[in-house]
Length: 223
Image 1 (cartoon, rainbow, N blue to C red):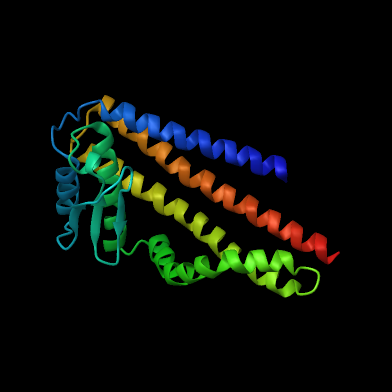
Image 2: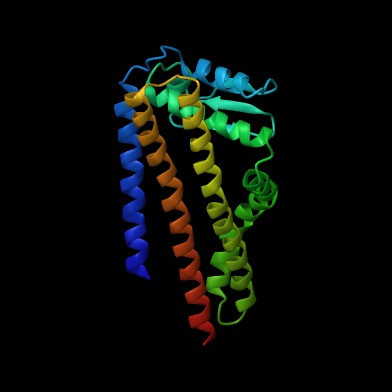
């Protein structure tokens, strides 16, 4: 189990490093369309008939996300103002989530319904897990509750995967169908989004490995 967790941690570090390096690399390649990430996002939304979503800039690096609560596509400054392959790919990807929301994509709907409970769970889960480990011999039910809460977090991580992959597919399809990218541009955008998606894959695997560790700990102390 420890070897598995170390391997996943190493994979997580590598994928995260690789994604950042790819983002930096493709940030140096001018987007042939010559427009900013903000303009890419606005055009993709418009082409999909989405008029009630705003594109805004948020502080930080790689902080890009779509917020279904207030219907905003939030782009980091490098993406919002950027005119590169990387900024175009990421802006289109985040708009892919907006399209999912508008089309009531089932996995996104399910994922969004989990967020309120997940927010509460994440606040109390660390304390329950620590308390459960410390009192496993006298009060094993506490760790059981902690494991159940962590399992919910793991489920959320895996539900996120089809949401992210589908958003990238929608982004790439639009970039191609709208003639925004040539073959070289498209290949680079696809590569950047593939590495971005891989960060979610290793995060899900890390969550699963941690869950299995807690389960083995719980079962071992019970036996």
